[in-house]
Image 1 (cartoon, rainbow, N blue to C red):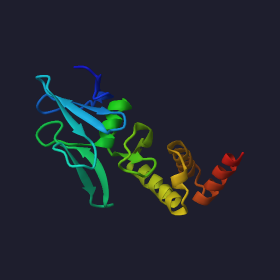
Image 2: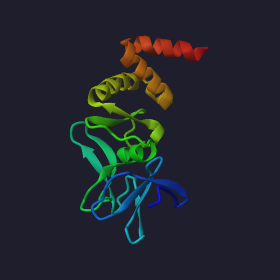
Image 3: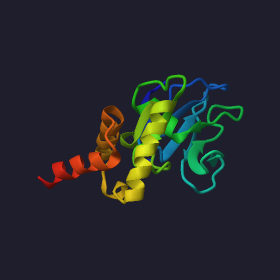
Length: 176
């Protein structure tokens, strides 16, 4: 079984996960294209978009009322995977440890580019979300790149500065 191939002019990589019926599931680096290959070699398309297709649907998180993209029934017998998990598993080469979650750095849960994902424990995830809520409420989040958001968030989580103190440091650094 091949690990990477070109599907509809986009590189896709295998998601290392067992399937019930021998399918291999592949996903693009941004999660927008996916396909599975049956044991007989037949390739079936699955796009991760908000539009309704046979193999994709939106998963509603009842606690936060946020909508996450998922690929449905790609591993056979109704098994599904969140797009963020598929991208992380296929492109980072790292597993998602038990009790860990995927965090979207820019806060947009449908932006599943590998650069926008980080794997965190539940406790770390809560702290990151708190910092990003403060950034969003201040209007600063929209003007920052994923790398800047990660740097500010990590620094806040690590050094205990308030978000305003951290943003003063950030703004001073970027004015020079």
